Image 1 (cartoon, rainbow, N blue to C red):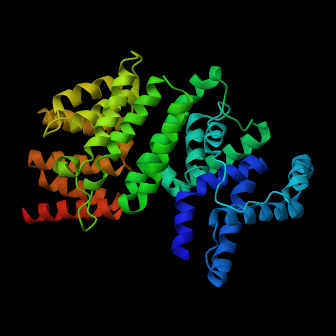
Image 2: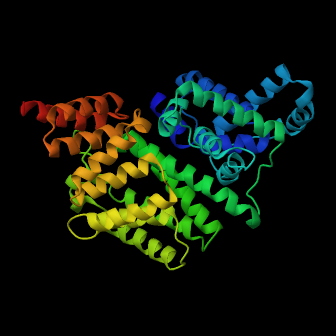
Image 3: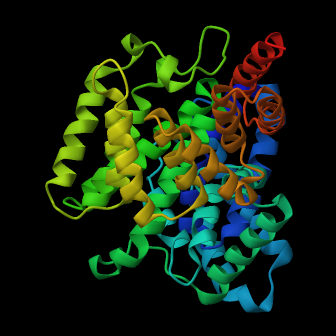
Length: 401
């Protein structure tokens, strides 16, 4: 029972939250009501078993919990909205799992320009994807308390501004699309960070939402670029860990486990995007992913050039880190190490930085410094799979003395 409820919370929370917010028009009320329903499910399902329509059960109970909260805590400034919910709420029963999918509307509401972009992305990751505040803070290299305050302010601003719950008109897309794609990309990356055992649901969520965007707005090069990136990356999922759950770096993966048909499909979407001559960062990232999949080895020289172009669009420490690694793989080890020294102050809480630094220091023969970097990376590892790989590398380095 607990396992089934955890699966629903992980895979279907976004759909449930979207349906609740569509009805209640209140982010915090919807989140509280769903949490109440989950707690009720623990006791009720333990006694009576899992219902035939678990999503419908959760949504129905969440509505009732929301009504209870409205009756108990109604305040003057929200009494009008509360009465509207109360007027039709009792008849709003859901008996099946065929819940209308309102997630796209929810994403665009979270990504309203009244919110700064960082808050847009963080709120959508919390409400739609169900990531914890700690997970979101880690994605942004922020403190958990700081991110919690940001999320609270974003919810309050949506309520105060009475932001419309709808997919925007075409004229509004340019200012909203960058944040929406950032949300999808971070959801996908959060799934990968969690490892294949726990993260495939998030990866599939991101793929679904990106494909939905592509259908809603055909001909948008950056949406196609994002979709191509996700499809190509997800095609390597079977090779990312070994039988014991340990992470396998891309260069050491068994390419025979990659889904070649999915890679080809992603490459076709990328070609369609590039043909529109509207280059953007997601198309460049997809091109980098494609270069890893052509032939028996990654084309590091081409990848380094693509990162040079990407840096013009996204001059961030993370892009500089990946660019430095690409140049090191292409033969410029000393320049890459110098670049890492330069960007180190801004990446002190970012595990991939220390893992990459350790690898390059080992190649340079600086084993003592590499050991320190590996230890830091291990302490920051976001998943057991990554921790296992880092522990193995650290152990091999210790054997060298």
